[in-house]
Amino acid sequence: MLKLSQLFFRRSALILTVTFILAALTGYYLLRQMEIDTHARMLRNSLTILEQELQTLPPAKIPATLRTIHQKTGIRITVIAPDGKVLFESNRSPVGMENHATRPEILQAKKSGWGEAVRHSATLDEDLLYIAHREGDSYLRTAYSLERIHRQLLQLWLKALGFFALILLLILALSLRLNRRIQGDSDRLRRSLEQLLEKNYDAEIDTVECCKEFAQIRKMLRKVSKKLAKRERQKAKYTKKLKTLTRRQSDIISAISHEFKNPVAAIMGYAQTLRESRNLDPQIRERFLEKIHSNAEKISAMIDRLSLAIRLENRGFTPKRNRFPLSQVISSVRETLLQKYPGREIVLECEPVELEADRDMIEQAVMNLIENALKYSADKVIVRCDAEKLEVIDRGEGIEPGDLEKITKKFYRVDRLSWNNSIGVGLYIVKYILRLHGTELEIRSVPGEGSVFGFSLRGMKERNEKLETRN
Image (cartoon, rainbow, N blue to C red; front, top):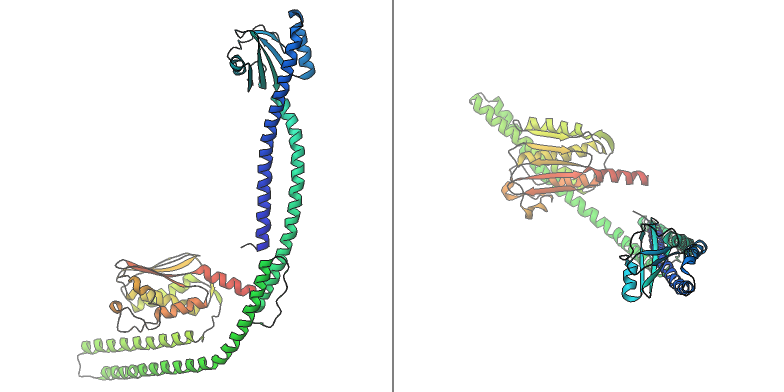
């Protein structure tokens, strides 16, 4: 994103450039029309004078006179009969020339006495400005080359363009000066904001001098600094209370965990007793033992998840960043879950991606997402990842829109999808782990069709870049 000063300077330069181009084009066409109008008036005046002069000459001298005038002035002169036949021509012999009765300027002169046209001359093979006048039964026509007009116009236009360019350069210099003042003030305000971010509320906010708006921002920053200083003192006052409440909450959860572990120990002991019993049918005994043991392991896993959720909530974890292939983590999770859920299918569609994050935390988050998909669907689960994102896709029952915003809350369970070993912290843990890595859990679901759980890997990369910049 550009700085305010850069944005101002670039837009000013763009506006000036566009203005310069538009002014140049508009000026060129206006000057061109002015030149044509000027030469048209000149040709009319020349026609009037020429008519008077030709009336005094004998017909035999007219061709020589027309050629002389053309050589001195560059004006082409033609005398045309009423029927359109060329009688005299200054540039060449009239013999063999086309009939001019249908020429636009002759038709206009026939109606109103005067005719004017800008067109291509087949005789000379160039564009000319024509002025014709009806004198009695004949027509006298003058013409001037547009190429000459264009050369004269170009000289005039270049002078005007140079003058306008000097004005634009002056405006650009003034804009550059204003741009530097804006940049200086914005840098001072930025330094003041950095002081606020570092909680240095007593630091003096630098004076700005560019414009009234920046002065108002400085004034508001001073007010914000005072309010933040006051809030920081209040925060320190309540920190002890919050820590006390947090410890109490941890004690409560620890007590709950302890209550869970007691029945787990009892189940494990009971299972051991059953294993040692010789009176039960071996098959029945083994089946019951496996069920008891499996449920005990599930309860133990719930306790571990609950403990992890509390530690995350209390900021008990700090990510230990290291670089690793994401596909290795996903493959490891897949092997673990296939042992836990035999007969299920987990399809990996992953590109080679190097990730810089806490490997154990990411592995826990991926495992929770895939296991969540396995529990809520009977079909295969697809894990798809590339440089931008990771997604876990299932074709299960889906989630109602009203539950989407709630399922990541601690201890929340969707009633119709609950199972007897879930305490509703799996997605809660995933959400906290991802937030610690600078990204968010994204959920898309259609009831009856399935769900997609995933997160952006780009967010992790951006967070890492920010941390490296700060360090």
